Length: 178
Image 1 (cartoon, rainbow, N blue to C red):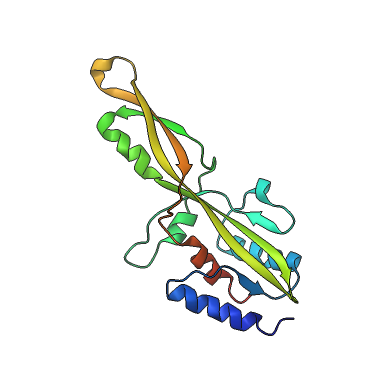
Image 2: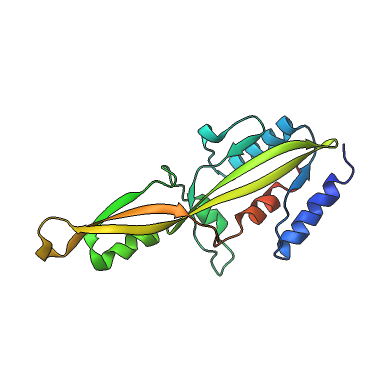
């Protein structure tokens, strides 16, 4: 076992508390055992996984609607409590134009995590990566009589390259001590 693994885990927590996200975390044990421990931690927090994203050496979570952190300190728990079953799949909404923004605000950003493990000198290297999407309103067409002012608008999720939150840091803090 790598004697530095616990020390590096504490370093990861310290870096995350200072606003820096580590690029990986060293955990004890073989990759399969580490992935089982990661799975148990995620299940303990009721964070669902995507069965199609589970492979040897990696797992992927379901997609979730991002909710910005609240002033009382909550935030990621609220996001993980709001899974998006279809993932980044487009949708349509029928309402007056002034109510269309409500549909987009319901889930402005989606994210999903991929956690992978590789052997690393007697320990296991754990890497957390996130994928982000933002909702974009497409074309709107009158729904029924145009005089009613009701429109059917199409929405799609597009890749987001500037994520609004640091979910990786939260997950690394969750996994310290494995």
